[in-house]
Image (cartoon, one colour):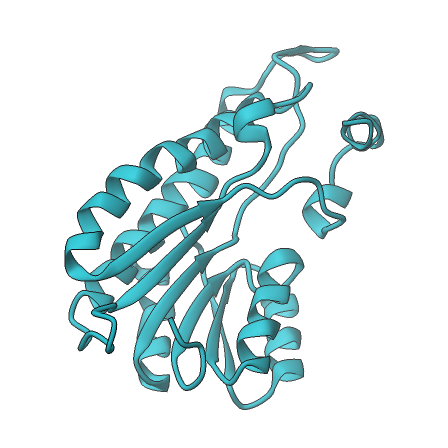
Length: 212
């Protein structure tokens, strides 16, 4: 998939891996919509990247919010790609000092990391399926972000590992389905990186992860 002159949506594009991805896309001649819930970070990054970047405040778990991000992308040109980087990484033990793992925090992690990824994926696929295929028969590409925790989760990562394991598990069936329409689907599983998400974890969790 050529990046130059094509449009991509990057969730979580205001910081961390998402911001780095957006920067690379613009550097290679593409256009990007930064879809992020953090308005301050997203607007600052879009301003930094210039005319080929646009920020849209986006909650990946909401249908209307997600559709607004894709509408902005279509205004820029032909949507050819989605990169799912938005996510949260809470650190919470199944049984900690304050009692059992909070059910609402587990559900929130699944909602953002897994359901949010699927929400953006399904909407992007609908739009890209209507694209004219390129010379290689390709209409678009979707890249999701899982984590090494999907395969080797650590202390306090039950919710996070479950959410990222779900992202991994749904990738193959989605890829098999969308390959028929010329849309490639894949998931990467990065290791530990110093991002705002990591730095937001408790110090003891950061220390434990650093020993991996």
